[in-house]
Image (cartoon, rainbow, N blue to C red):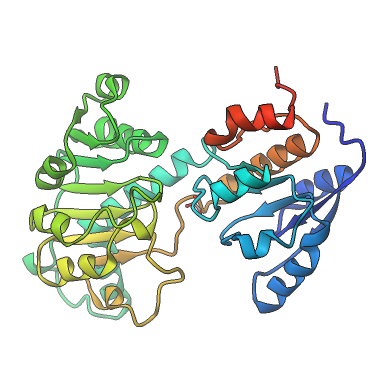
Length: 340
Ligand code: DGY
């Protein structure tokens, strides 16, 4: 059972369901910042000096902001990605960081497959034609798509979401799976009959090139002009990881010059995507507004997971989803109890 001796102060910068709000109120004083507009950011700045815990997503919590929160003990991110946080800074301040892995894996892989199918079969482009009254006769070859089943699925970054994508491709669509990650993963290879490739080999071989990598100093700008030049004109590029893993200007160049057939993109260098982006002028681009985990069920599960993490951290217990790098050192530093 969770016991927080004195009610601590929690600042939310994301709205939660009533049930989760009640749960938080039972254990902590809660300040809710409803929207992260200019006024919301002011409210956040005003609330930070009292905050022991923060919970939210989609906000870069840099030193400038966090310096305003001298009592801060834990941040519960409602996301699996942790690129909005400066781990070194948090480590130096002994602030715990938690995230929400697992609960969004299947939903995000569904999004990846939605983009694979939509871009290969030109679903969005052709649906817009129907809506615009342009379906006057049966479509001809100029509007045909390309098959998904049986094509080679290339996955860059074989983590949880990569595996869920491989599962769909292998069992659902009879796709040979090739992948690139830090090192080969024998269990994945056995399960999905997958084969490891160097990045260069994968880019040359895959029909669908899917990014499922976290954004880190190592992966930023990983896919640029040189990498697009290796892809085949029939290949389709899918990004459900982070926009900054890709050099967007190079992607636009590849699409405009037929270096690749199409792209399905859920993430962008800057979000929301600029309405003047050339990506939005290209028929062979399916662009979605970072909907990877955006289903009713999964967003609620992520929020629940974040609340569990935060309450555990504030109660001096080890949160279930402490960010990896912190596990050992932070539990020691904080003298946190192990959860059995
Ligand atoms: C995640 O959980 O990291 C999603 O991409 C939302 O940011």
